Length: 263
Image (tube, rainbow, N blue to C red; front, top):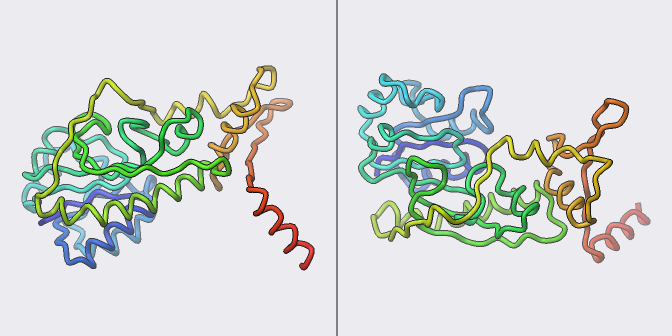
């Protein structure tokens, strides 16, 4: 199938590389604008396309961009960690629809930072492949796979687990998608959870005058531990003091102690 690829970040890069290795035809590429790209250079290089077939994701509602993509005759769209909401006119360009890879176990944690909210709210974590509709992460389900949240997980370690699980699920599922053999399971749009980017702002500041139980406080700090991002903080004399958390199982800590003694 002729694929219009919309991607960002390490997972977006890995999926695109795999598609090229499998011989899939990439009709066009949509990336974030320069200030919002992660692994953008790698994605563009992996696509192997001329500049006329590479588009800025912030411009997908412009009529000239819509027309340019239409002329490429893509059959299916594939979105991997792509951060823009897609409109009806754009979605109608692909006769086989547009598929998204989302690092959450839908219907839980639609939207932003699913790794954070699975820790903070205790919602099931996992990865999902689904069709895109005009709302955020509410389209028909294709496949999903749960990921265990361990007590030693931080926002970063859980994110990495979700990345790898999503890549594995995609490789298993894509042959069925591209051959038209998948079934679609509608989501109940009234169930599940949804978060916006700005929602983390209400948990990032730790109020030193507030009562937290131990689990709640630990979960906030570990969920927002993701180097190099600053994460959770408290204020002291008008300055922000940031916190990061390291967590180890007992046997891991003993192993580290022995290595420290040797060194």
